[in-house]
Image (cartoon, rainbow, N blue to C red; front, side, top):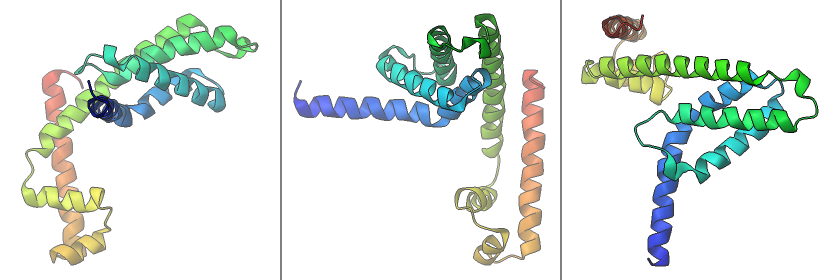
Length: 182
């Protein structure tokens, strides 16, 4: 393998890792913060977790829950930190850490179901409705700026986006009811 091939493979691996990490890092940190009383310690543990995840990324199974995998690694890093810490009396015991990890996994699964339902419902919107939402949420435009761009009144933009939100909420609830989530 040439150096150029090796660099390309490393870049692809880095890209795949970052594609998984970016939307999930806050979930992993949230789990760590739910167990660690000190934010500085939690940040140190997160760095250890991310290093371990990078080192073991070739063992991650694509299509499985990346955040859950990260939380599992975090659980062991927290336990390791506790054992090394001189002030472990302030930290939760291992059983509670396991319970919190299970609850974190449960919440992530529910969140994933909501996200999946939202994606399905957004696909049912018209191109015009999607355009309005993109202007508002991707481009961070104000309602006034949107009204100016699309040539409708400010009140019309408020009403249109409000109607889209209401339809999405109904659609999500319907999808989740079908799956038995709610």
